Length: 516
Ligand code: AHR
Image (cartoon, rainbow, N blue to C red; front, side, top):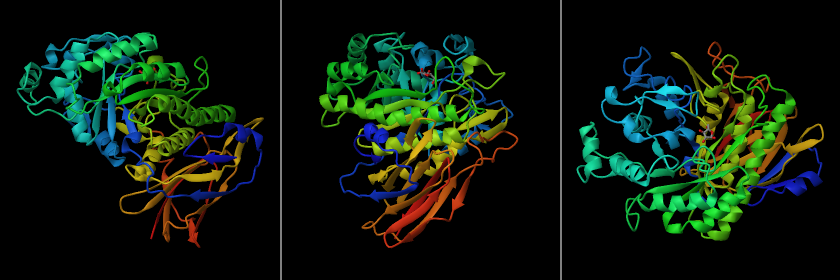
């Protein structure tokens, strides 16, 4: 099975060839015109959902948990370590019920509302625009604000842009901002125009949403978008290609910078299966969902190419990740789940797919950062743990803003009963210092893969590496044993005669750094 990582994924040849050889030859072909892998592919998502914001990011200034202006110091340190490039907020579904003016000014005057999508819990709005944008500055990350289209107004979105980004004193909104304690504008480039408009964002048809989008987008800026606002249209759910088609056809290119896509790896929405005590079949099914991202991107991009051959509109996968049953004994609406080596495989494969589509995929946001779905961090009061997914993000941050090196190879197959998948996923890039990084994932639950990369012409001599591996696919970190799954130095890679050789253990991720 030949996997062309830049171009289309040949599903038909995958099933036509049942070659089980475990030795793989990869050809790395550096090209001057290869795209840069945007660091924003490594983005995150924080919604007012369960314990993502309250207890996760934010504990309030009076908490005994060490914090800066209410934001947990341990969380800031952990997220800076993985160089979090952007953070999407306040939802998700919550965004289309959120009226941002409820979350500004003195906290005692802020109204409490019901969070209708996520357990009907009371939301006291103590974490609002100032708290979020100041937190982004602390995290050294770029904010991505998702505006309310479903139950909001174009004026409300326009006011939010003025409140957050317009120069001091230039109109009533920046004057209000200053009155509330912030003189200088924040930098907010990314603006979502609604979320899941086909569902919780208003149950709209694409024809209706695209008209509404045009109206909202019109009032975000001036004739020439001189403020450089980056407007993101609410995109399709997984394989809803008609959604992308209608939006690409109906929205003028001067009103849109990006279109989104959401895809969750879920076995069955009615029977999602446990997050940690899953079977091999459930593991395989999540890997099928992970690989599906390749097909989804290819097909959505083909539609985009038809209307936008010059690739002016970006594709952002602004929600992705594994979705399982909640942990026993926790609130079903809070979406709190554990995170295992299966999630590390899912993250490794997905991020490689995004890297390899860097020409069109310019941002992605794993759902969600803390305590919700495929989180990189879990907290329990003052305790914190970093999940296997966190470690993959840390290993892969070498690809941030590096130039893609396309890889070509025939992957052996991972077989479960009569179903097969490519066992190996890989991507590579060259950073600004000339160092080349390879991230290789072996999803096979039993077989190791011996890999040889032809690096002739890349001028590489030395190699070092890291591996994320564990005894069982179900292995995960707990508050009592937070380092059960952890990265180790990897010393088994060998470079000679323009060939880089190494072995990737079953269900493991290896990242190699090669230099002159
Ligand atoms: O991430 C959880 C929810 O999944 C989001 O609120 C919504 O956009 C999606 O359906």
